[in-house]
Length: 566
Image 1 (cartoon, rainbow, N blue to C red):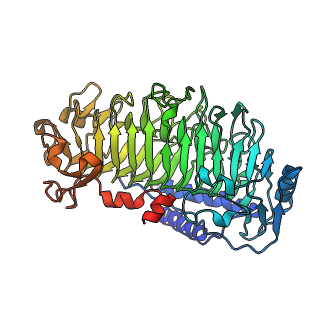
Image 2 (tube, one colour):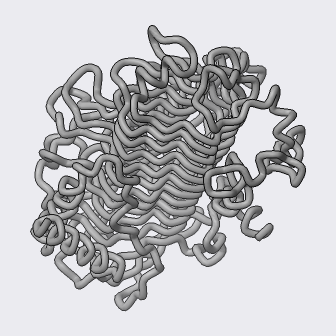
Image 3 (cartoon, rainbow, N blue to C red):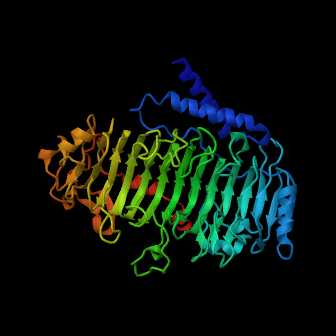
């Protein structure tokens, strides 16, 4: 008990320090290592309480624009502009502002060097027209004329960080790949995913992409928009697009060798393989688990021009997998996002994958735990969520303490997405809570397989039964599956339209069809319950069964149109 209290106190102290923006610099790398260990100590100490709700991120990054007290360094484009820009990166001190001409092109592979400790001062790199960009709202390709352009002429990054680089904020910058260059492996690389970064002291930290436009080209391969192998890094109000590759996974944002915390808020993320992913390769830093991730108000989408057989298909068969995937992550908040367009291709089409993966066999500590998924819309996908308790190829940690609450799943399954229409596929998990979701799907509610799931709660959800409802491998529908795969589970106050009460636990509801639920206006995708609905006050908490549509809409992304509407 004493060690738990001490670890918790250390974590609270650490969170307070971060929240007050007392950030570490290169000279404080030892403190970064110590605090990272403290965060893991707290999580390990509480891991025995596996039935407890998911823990939220212990650190929420403050991205308030800092005061600047140094020089203003203007960098013009044109001849030798790339040399001048790299020289400015090398010479600028924390507290300086580098101003790049809007519309100017800087062609090259640029590196942010490490600077001495400067007590939390930031280097700002911004467009000369930054004041014309939207405030507190997402940029779009239409803003490109207001941005200077950093263009990679080859397979290497347009921008990368030196070991230990810190406290740099990019505002209103476009990052792109030269036209007709066939393959780029990563456009903005924060940190290193391989053998060049094996110690926590080497990790770049305190980095922000603010209202930036990061993109590939329509017909070329871009494996990764942003490589997130860093600490205390934020991507806010930005637009990342055309991240795709033939025959390989591509992501808008992906990280596996950085400890976090990460703040990914109000961005457009477009990736063919995975729009956002943590994991996918073994960390080179021993025992590293990306932790304390705030992932809110983003739009994750795959253009239908990428879908073979669709009328808008553009003719290039990119490798398509899912919208959001965690393979190694801890304390993740997924809130207020719009996730759409995911079909069967390189995978079976689940929009969300929560699956611990010791990818190459050298990181058996990998886990997916303390995940909170609330107030999201997931739509136009072959399947909903897949939770795999343990890696089925190598030893790993367990998927545990996962909360899925107040989400809308719409148009899941059906012939357009070529999938099985399953809402949830689950195996060998611990402490998964699925509560107050509205689910419009064509397949099974839950498909269970492998080992049983401990401490599973399924309450206050609204959906159709469809053919098999809740079913497991080698088990019949309903109670037999529940007893075998969810032996101490709770299934209560769910509306299962078209199901048979005799084969399910008591205290659930079985209207003949979804029409009897009485949505506000189902034909126009308004899924609140009307005053006439018999389920309006029937949940365990006295609220309507299904999701709270008002809370969900309040949490959604802030584009300029949404900002104006509010």
